[in-house]
Amino acid sequence: RSINFNAGPAALPQEVILKAQEELFDYHGTGMSIMEMSHRSKEFHAVHVHAQSMLREIMDIPDTHEVLFMQGGASHQFAMVPMNFLHPGQTAHYILTGTWAEKALQEAASLGSVDVLASTKETGYRSVPAELSKKPLHSAYTHITSNNTIYGTQWQSFPEVEDRLIADMSSDIMSRKIDVSKFSLIYAGAQKNLGPSGVTVVIADKDFLGTAQREQPKILQYKTFSDSNSLYNTPPTFSIYMLALVLEWTLERGGIHAIEKANNEKAQLLYHEIDSSEGFYEGHAEKGSRSQMNVTFRLPSEDLTAEFLKGAAAEGMVGLPGHRSVGGCRASIYNAVPITHCEALAEYMEKFRKKN
Ligand code: PLP
Image 1: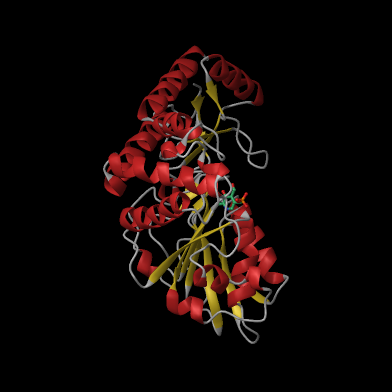
Image 2 (image 1 turned 45 degrees about the vertical axis):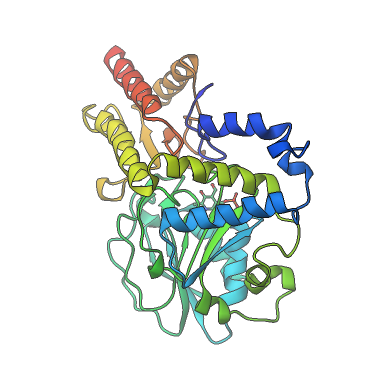
């Protein structure tokens, strides 16, 4: 298998792929795979509720919050959040830390009143804001992106806001211990840390859900999913099954503490390589905002970047070109990426630097 640094869809644990392969032909003696049976079957129902309870255990989700499985990716949530929670007469506040935050803002702006509470756009999204300049008034909520996949920045601690805090955690959910109770709503497309694309996880405060507007079509209301335990219509059954396998793997590895420790070690290997390169590799993110999930860096020239990427590919490493809006390189090192892959990349970076 490749040494996979894709940004999403991204590497899944090898053990998970093998287990899915083993169960694909005949799931638990049913004579069919999980994707060939009803979402109302007892077999699928067991997978569905087990995934919810494992996520609760791993992320220590309090009883005040619900776990929903939805579809449409994080982009769908960009619209769902304001549709449900941006009431007339209120303003939704957004903190801009990258492209995804901008997209979330655009959707809200098409539905109601919005304001930017802070932004690091002018400095090329190299950091998350150090402080919030304004106090939100008549605020529906404040929206943040916890990890900026494209720029490689991440909130090290979350901003203290007086209104409701909502976070797009698509690229760092379940990568570190967080206090879920601080958030009124968290959403994440699964395709980075949780499994394949197709399922979107939403963790929401039950009281907050109760304040949602009711005039939307049913399929666009969170209430519809919460009233039906996310089984209002056919859910993405195979994605939820894969999510369950990833959650089992996470628990077997020792849960969130073990994952967080490994993520720190992995990121440290690559940042050390950047910092000790005497300027050969230049990190995009400021040190205080560095992401543990997406390590972004540049080489001294476009030619060297191309050569670096070509050599990496020859060593079996994929997914290293940076996002087209930032250029350079990006190593996405989500939970499933083993430390051995980061060691291989760090070694290659050192070798390449010495050669050039
Ligand atoms: N938010 C973040 C932080 C992302 O990294 C991405 C995709 O990479 C998205 C949102 C968009 O997700 P989706 O394609 O699931 O709509």
